[in-house]
Image (cartoon, rainbow, N blue to C red; front, side, top):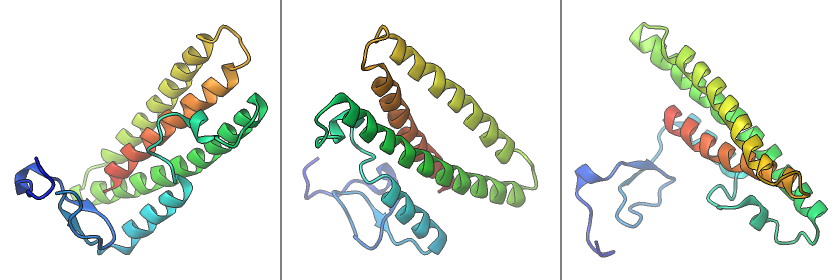
Length: 162
């Protein structure tokens, strides 16, 4: 598809952005919900580089393993805050859904999913760390894994909240 053609309406999911209009053929709409705008703005502040592939590569100013470890650890702290906030937004959306449907299903399901995800994250990142054979990069690898998986989970939770 060239950049001048417009994708059929059925093939594009509207996204919520702040008045930028069509963006590369993606249908865009204004957010009329102040709460939604605030949550996205907050998370943009907490995760300015959520699309980066490798957290260690984001620490370009670090000159040693200690500095890289410190940098990645600070990223993990920001991701933890974003996870907390996005989980809160998702729980609020689940509560609203349960209220509208008259069923208490969405909140318990989200709680179970979050607990399962945390167990998966911990086990997966420990496995990544184990692959380093106890070497000096083990801690950085584990923390980087937690950052990567945490960023992906923030995205999932925000999609749930929308």
